[in-house]
Amino acid sequence: MQDPRHNPMHAPTPAKESWRRPIAIIVLMVIAFAIVVIFRNEIRVRWWGYRLAQTSDVQDRMQYLSLLSSMDVKSLPVARTLIKNSDPANRSFGVALLSTINGDEADRLLEVACIDNDKTIRQSAILGLSMRATANTVYRLAGLIKQLDADSAMFAVSRLAGINRPESLAELTRIARSHPEAGVRAQAIESLGQWGGDGVVGPLIDCLSDDAVYSGLTATEAQAHDALASMAPQFATSDKPGSDSSKPENTGAAKDTNGMRAARKLRDITGQSFGYLDADAAERTLAIARWRSWFESKSGE
Image 1 (cartoon, helix red, strand yellow):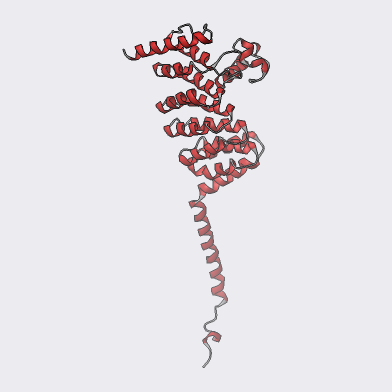
Image 2 (image 1 turned 90 degrees about the vertical axis):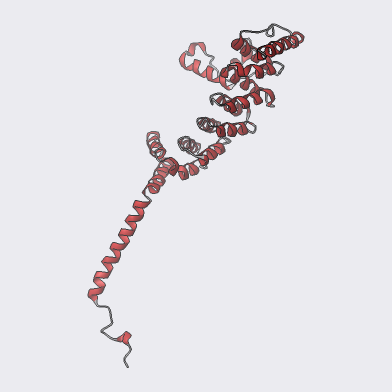
């Protein structure tokens, strides 16, 4: 019996082969088109992220950043890649992108960027995180303050004051009373003064016994210095904040303790001073006692 495989009747004809190939190509094209349609946003995001990282034109970069920002969480993979880039400029754009993305994953990545080895990126990440203005943000920032360098910690404390939540006030109070760095405590005292109101009076009275002297500029003071330099350069020092000519000792505040900072804030808030600012070390103890007595009487009303 003849093998059917060798039967000419069963062999594919050239005509069949000629129409099968175009159909296969069409099917593959349809599948490819469907994949592109389904994953078009992911493809766009990856392309925009690639272009943002590769181009050196700032205007183009800003355009790609704007496009990526419009995609919210779909841009997370790009942001994650950018903040790991070796180029500080790309990491900076990664932080800017994360600041526009909602969700816990974006918060976590911003928290990672807060300990970047570049100071500008650290501060940008702290700013982006603080803009969330949630209780979770407060706790993240408070945790970071314990491990950041003094300058970045002061900046983070200054941002806490802009989050109008009871958790912020609690953290500012804790930092002002017990942080190991005098400068960070000084910033917390400044921030409590900015917060204002009856709720900060007790914590500030506790700070009156802080005899540490911080001779640099707090983040709040540095920001005021920069604003002054921008609006009225003739009244600002020519040196950068932190240099000798811009430190408080050159403005008559060289021997100011953190307690004196607190006393000035208390005077601004309550109108009271009890002679603290004009007293010597021994008399300040009596002035603090007067403050506590006055506060207890006011609290009991």
